[in-house]
Length: 170
Image 1 (cartoon, rainbow, N blue to C red):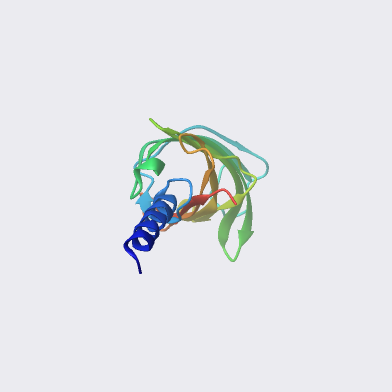
Image 2 (tube, rainbow, N blue to C red):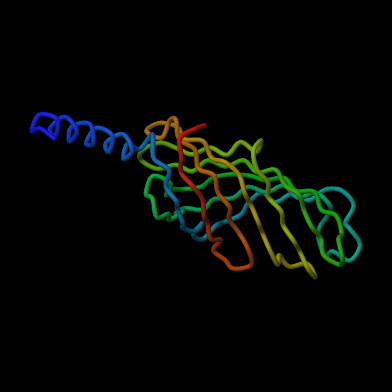
């Protein structure tokens, strides 16, 4: 290659690398956890499923997690949200299908989960939570406009672990 062609190739390569490294264009695998969460305004309604140890069949609750810590700082921050769950008995366990709304806020903007794209399932055995599993999509605002975080969280260990992919809105 000529020196001129080599120079053009180098410039094109650097521009392409810059595009891939741009926050709006890359796909990043992310891990972290919810941190300690606090619940409030718990409301039970409906008939209690027999043997569940619950206060009713419908649970509504608000929560705050002051510091979600993630491997990509853009996704770290304070979580504020609420959920509504409907419990039924399945093989001796009370299993809830829930709708969850949440906003994660930090200095760059926020991540919004509007409840339309995802799921939250809670399993209660003998009146105690034994598993929580959530998956969904959080949409970025502010500096994170045009990005989304597809995630899974929960399990049996607390604070809940989070894994997912930060990517451009598709």
